[in-house]
Image 1 (cartoon, one colour):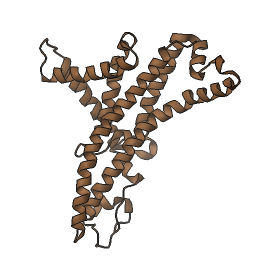
Image 2 (image 1 turned 60 degrees about the horizontal axis):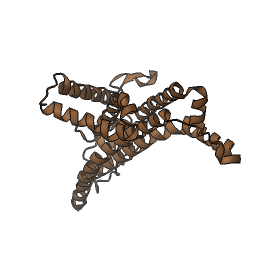
Image 3 (image 1 turned 45 degrees about the horizontal axis):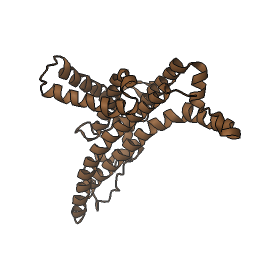
Length: 273
């Protein structure tokens, strides 16, 4: 066995059941990556997740640039797919949540947000990459904070300070004596809890999904010995099923993230009395 038990999968490829080595279960170490450049101790470094985020951004920008650089009345394949993708977010999420008149100006932002989140999720099942960037809490948290600041700014801009106060506290004098308690809960919910839950919803789903994929993938290899081969086959089938399920979850999580972002914008633009 190697000195470092977290490196079993990487360095002991002959580790199988009945060989006297323990099952190298995935854990927090599965979400930590050594710097590709720089020094992790100095907080100035570049690692795998940063590389995937950068490559994902390039892929998204590159695709839409190719799709729309020379738009035609009769669209080609890339333009047709690009228009369908753009229209899905515009009509299926933004218009349905914010409305066509108010929502049109926010469509580019929401389209960018949707495809960035989706691409970061998709890395989980792409060979070699095989890691969802959004399973690192800092990435969905930054995205959630961008949405949160957008909501704050829009609310101030549309309603002024008094309107903003009513918006974030859910001010409603008709509820009577419980108004102070209600306003306090609403304030902390909107100011502190909202960006946290927005980020954690995406992070937790991708973290759990990747852990399950790792678990069955490692188990498939670990069980390849003796009678364990039969169980390895079952585990590999689970890998295939989980991969298909993850494809669905990745798209759903991108949809939910942007749907919530649109609902926050709609709340900022709505009139409060």
